[in-house]
Amino acid sequence: MKKHDEEDQLWFNNLMKEDLTRFDAAHAPEVPEQHRFEELVYAHVQDTKRKLWRELLLFWLLACFIFGVMLWIIDRNWIWFAIIQAVTTAGGIGYASYALARGRHREWKS
Image 1: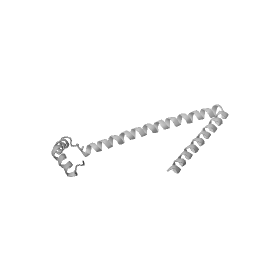
Image 2: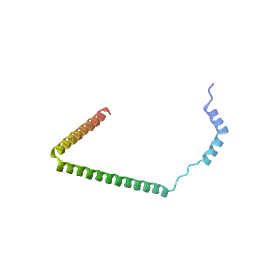
Image 3: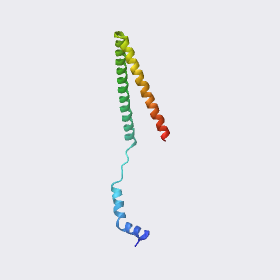
Image 4: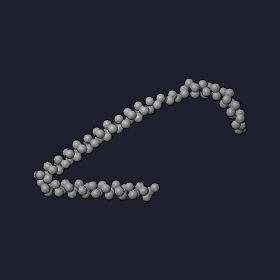
């Protein structure tokens, strides 16, 4: 047999409402002050800046190393330089075409 909604509400009010109200009052969430949010944002910005500078430094060091190796190869042997350049160019074109085709495939799916 099905109870009426009013009976259920009365049962809830009589047995559970007081306890739940007391529980809610005891466990009310604490909202932090605005300066704590500002500190969090400032710390995140500083951390992001550090990471970006580190990545930029790594990029430039790697670029200088690659440029130096390529200059050394040019100085030693023109044929090897041409072979390395051709392989690198073919790899770059292959990767770009693969990435472009993959991107177009995704567009068609949606």
